[in-house]
Image 1 (cartoon, rainbow, N blue to C red):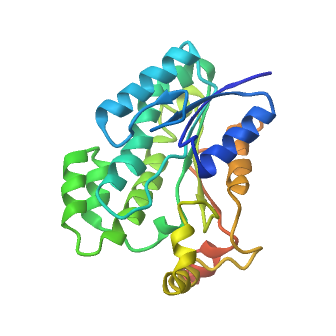
Image 2: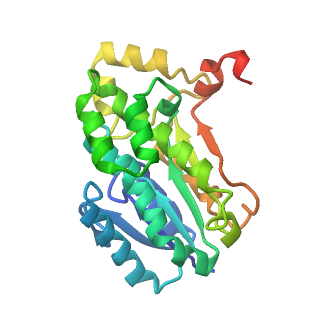
Image 3: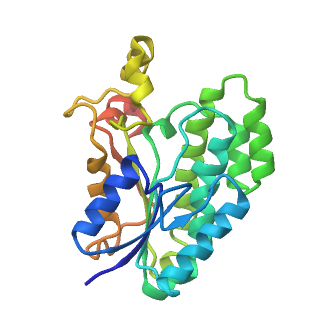
Length: 254
């Protein structure tokens, strides 16, 4: 049976690979991106996020079988707050009634970086759903590279807080995330081009199982999260990272 799946970040990388997998199995993909998509919208702005919600609702007819939020910004800076965190959270919230109508499922894209040091002010503002404060905190950090992990850590904490609630679990909506390690996409290409950055990346994200991953690897994992077989998993962050999280985690944290 064909299912209606909304997918952000559809134009490239993990989003494009996931869309191809979905279509290959007969699902209807409602792609959202800043260009080359069914719904063209800028998730960096509140108006753009509302346009994305409205566009998806128009195409799904008020019933949505799944939502995958893949869109993200890798360049360090405050826009990471708006796209990586609010671009996921606000779409989940805005499309929740359509997901509830179909007992739909939600898959978010987190990151292994969410386990790394964060800026507490950014995380707190994100969790308070205060985008202006989060943007101010991001603009004030001394090391902009801390913004990305802060957004991914906040996203993981948000999904765990809402997953068991009446609005989600009570409505039959599981919400989980895949946290990739290093993925071979245009988003990470600059890291491989610079030997110094590649060394830093390999030390921060060691991947002993099969090394770097192709975007289809994450696509297959997301497809399982939104599959009919997933009846009881919710509130989970699944690390698809070649063993990076297990390698880095202290034994005291098990």
